[in-house]
Every structure is written in C-alpha cells, then in structure tokens.
Image (cartoon, rainbow, N blue to C red):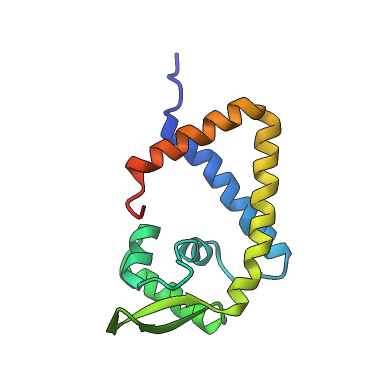
Length: 144
C-alpha cells in the first residue's frame, strides 16, 4: 500500500503547475525571450530593487548562477543594476519598464488560476486553504 503524498509535495505540485501556467501566459503575451529560470529569479524582485545575494537566496541558487541570469536579463532589457540608496557600495537589481509591462499578464493568469481553484474547491475550502497557507507563511517565509 502506498502512503499518501506529503502535504509539502502536494503544495509543490500545485505551485509548479501555477508557475508553469504563468510562464506560458507570459510567453504567449510576447515576453518569449525569458527562460523559466530567469522568470523564477525575477519573481524574487522587490519593487524597489533587490540585492543579488538576496535574489540568489530566494531562488535557492548559487550567487554565480544568479549573476549569470541577471546578466542575461539585463541584456534583454528586463532588469537594471542601480546603486543601493542604503549602501553606496552595494547595487540593487531592479525591474525596467519592460519587466513591469509583463506584470499585468502574469497577474491575469494568477487570477484565472485562483478562479479555477476556487471553482474546484468551493468558496469555503478555498478560504480555508488560503487561511492555512497564510498561517504557514508565518513560519516558512524568511522575508516577512
């Protein structure tokens, strides 16, 4: 008899599907010069910009890998490196207008996914799912 999948794996499967759908929607909207790895790195960008070391940690990749991905994103016009106002020696990676133009397309797909999940689960189960995940974020998200 096989054991039930762990909750963490079930969450990963749902998140992986959502991520792939958002990536596909961006590709279909004309943002087709970004790789999946680059898009995952961009998900870790804060609106005011993010240090490279923080991006690497959020994406759970080596700083060297993050540097290479940011270099390619910069050449494609999605990000720029700017001085960190809090520390003149440091630099932030910040989205350019080209990256900001992709956000509404990503948000639209996120809304479609939420609507599908809510329709499948029903409003009460969806509300409980969100409540539980928000509570788990308190102990799992180091960037809160």
